[in-house]
Length: 131
Image (cartoon, rainbow, N blue to C red; front, side):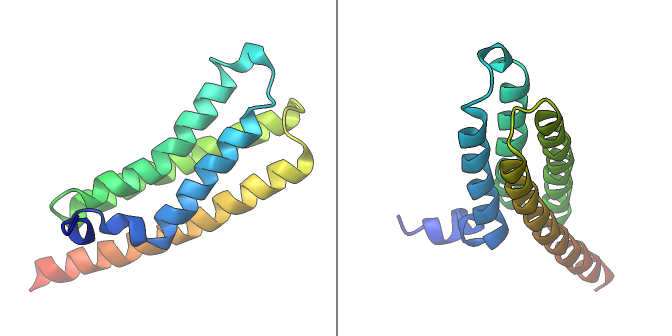
């Protein structure tokens, strides 16, 4: 599909790729949670994780850097949600400490990359409006 190079450029973003890896890790980590958490913490953690790369992709599908920045902010909010849910899972002993650390490290890396992308797009958007 030749339009893939334009329409789906977000797939080449390292931050999107890292966020996708985080989603897979969260899904695998939550498989061992108690069954009574199926519609509680498991569902919430998975939705928060999925929201991160989904909002990066949706923002790139919009027509302006301003819209992209808005969706990157939503993704950042999902990072904070997931961070809290990881801590809850750790305190409930649903996650082993090593797994919680791994997830937190992946989340931190994704968060830093997302902040960098947001900053560059926000500055670029301001430069375009100043011209």
